[in-house]
Image (cartoon, rainbow, N blue to C red; front, side):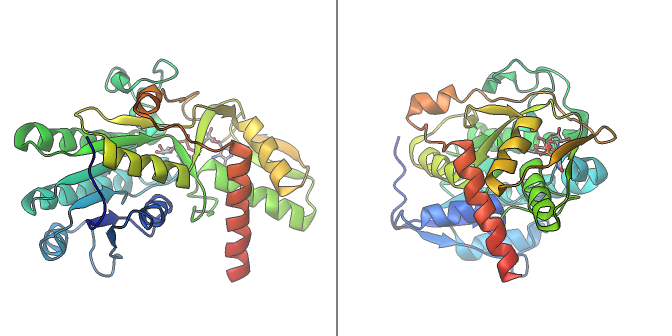
Length: 313
Ligand code: GFB
């Protein structure tokens, strides 16, 4: 299948976030019109606002990258926000898209939808085969509902809508707030600040042993545009880099990129979360996409963005 994006009107829901921003940048070279709207124009948690916006704009396709997201601490601290807001955003957008007869929707989930002890690398069909990781269960349940809702519109109404499951993401436009961020931006900031202060130690949450797979958001955006054009099917598709590192190794690579050596202090009062979540992206590779950049190059790009943000204040 090929869905030609040229001349199409494509709404990137969540364009102010890291992923939506990357998708909007990537779509700029596809000859399509990218539609965006900030929260001041449409609050995605409000059904009537979403319905009005969709009826007015009538996009040909939607990349649903809008979500309440955060790292392991934020997920545990704000269960209502992660469950309620994500359920509302996806239900509102999908139903309004159906009413407005939108031809293509690409829904974005997350690797945390899979069982805590899923087989590794995790194939798409391990969804709903075991208990979830408790620290992000709220977010995972909302995202599982989004996958199923996307499939339900396909099944009941024949909508050519699809879902993709990205692994842990990082890159330009990331959140660097230490309480709500993911590990990679948090450690970039901690190492940078340690260098500026000349500090001897950097604190890393948990034991440092959990394994994570990381993907640069621009690589994700490239894969998503590929799927939007080339994939049609009921099943969601994993999008990963295929490379996993321990949190300790990640900290060491970040230290090299920042150019500062400090002793790692592991804070055992903070949770490790799931021990391992390497996705099996072989379906995506078999379709023809396998272009993730090396982790160290990606971190260098993210660090440049972090420094740029600091300079802009
Ligand atoms: O990235 P992260 O917050 O999320 O944490 P998850 C990954 C690992 O890094 C955990 C450790 O073992 C953390 O304990 N870590 C070490 C740190 N230092 C830090 C730090 O300074 N900040 C943070 N945040 N972590 C999230 C889910 O899980 O993954 C979301 O909570 C989502 O729902 C996302 O699915 C992709 O990988 O554990």
